[in-house]
Image 1 (cartoon, helix red, strand yellow):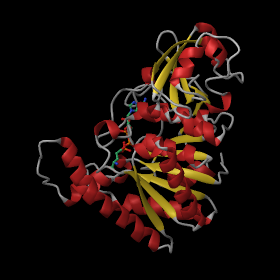
Image 2 (spheres, rainbow, N blue to C red):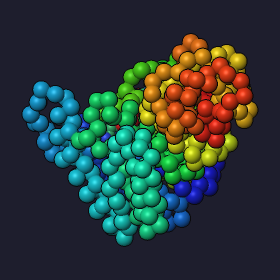
Image 3 (cartoon, rainbow, N blue to C red):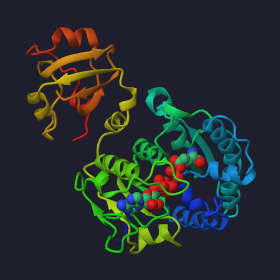
Image 4 (cartoon, rainbow, N blue to C red):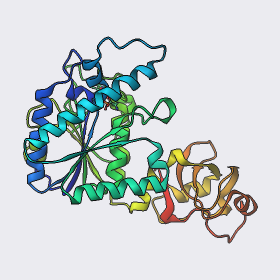
Length: 360
Ligand SMILES: Nc1ncnc2c1ncn2[C@@H]1O[C@H](COP(=O)(O)OP(=O)(O)O)[C@@H](O)[C@H]1O
Ligand SMILES: N[C@@H](CCC(=O)OP(=O)(O)O)C(=O)O
């Protein structure tokens, strides 16, 4: 099957770029760059999210002093490794007379609307200038709770931010299997519609040797991104010609079918959960309305509790009566007014539909 995408995000996992001994696999990187160049020449706009800094660092400093904290080791390896990684990309793209750029980001940059817009403008300018952005997490700054779950999460955020047509996640496996990939009777799930599978039951909670999040995060990010109207493909980056075959020929892999396209504002809100400064709890009736798929705003009449302090314009989390997340959205007024109006009829919506994201 051929896909005609205008703008794609290609996420390359650590395992794709490393050999079994953990050292960088230059011929693989070279082969991927050749395919990216081919796609670029076909007029596709590309943004690459590449892991591999820590693995590259290990090749430079194999006997890294085992400092007390694993965090410090990761900081040392990623900071020296990122230089090598981006130089490798830069040299390889140069051979084809193409420029790439390094963009290092943290989770905080997606929470803050100003940082978010700065980043977005920069990506647009790079694309306008035919430069290929190579994105990675800023591993020196991002430690413990400030970290992305993994670069799949980062790639999903970039895909939403840049209104990409598709996100291609390259791992060291052909796609998502319907059970343990090592068992002979399992096979790749080729097409996934929204909420069709319970992936946490299907996927073994195991990661490849050098990966961070594992396949469960990939499946959950893929579902979320597809819900926003962006196609997601999970394929094997270790296969020769994977990108060309996926886009222009037939390749067995997992394809999350995109839902109806969502507005840019909704896309930002969809990933803003971590920025929530307060929560509201709803009664069953309000939950039913908000999860029905119909266009409806969150009215104070259905609110049973308001916690935390938030102002107009802040992101708030919306829970049901069992504390399960319904979604999140931007408050049209602050927590004090929300408390006053809670349970009262004929009040202005606390969250307007255009600023509301439901996980259902
Ligand atoms: N049902 C499944 N289908 C596919 N892969 C699975 C499944 N269950 C567990 N996995 C594991 O998930 C790994 C890929 O995730 P991860 O380690 O995060 O890779 P990456 O470094 O590419 O991000 C695979 O190598 C595989 O061992
Ligand atoms: N920022 C890290 C990548 C961490 C990560 O998410 O790796 P992976 O699960 O292989 O995509 C690095 O460059 O080593």
